Length: 251
Image (cartoon, rainbow, N blue to C red):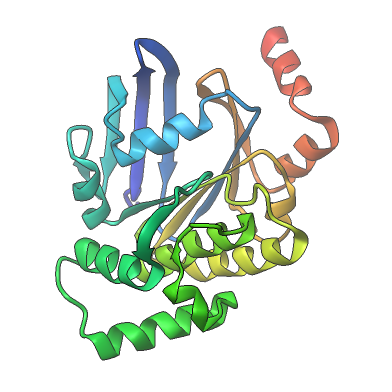
């Protein structure tokens, strides 16, 4: 049996002394797309930051095992070089740093070596064409004055260049109109190859109309409380999250 690419075991995480994650268990294998759904404040984004090693998120119990290696103590840059990457819900602006220089620097840092400029430009142009990103995008400062859709396109463009083994997408669909959603979804689908995996964190079912998940997990009060197939997202869209709470109360 194939070992999971990522295995999260009884993960407990604190932020500023307050426990947010309260025993998360999840296995993700190559080629799989997992959707994590839940209300605001349920801990979904905390899980994404904990997976990437954000220093303000303290693991108090449990393990994160990636490619057979426990990574609890690894720094964020070390995890990135191993093949983990996160697309943020609220990407920050970096005035004075062009998109082109930013992507070249991050690509070099993650791959561990300089990419020949001709090769880099060709690879970048191919990715931009797929995402409908215009050439002038490269000379703008990172997320400075960007619309919501432009910020999310840049996040997906960066993931495309970094080629992570697991792409974690935190609320990537928030703030997108339908055209931007379709474009971003197309970029996500391009990342979902047989040797890679995706963890897609979202409130709403609408992005799952374009990115088909293999598994859907419901997050409540810092843990996964139920899981199913793509049909579970449709049930959540129709009935909300109250029925999950009610079933848990009855159980």
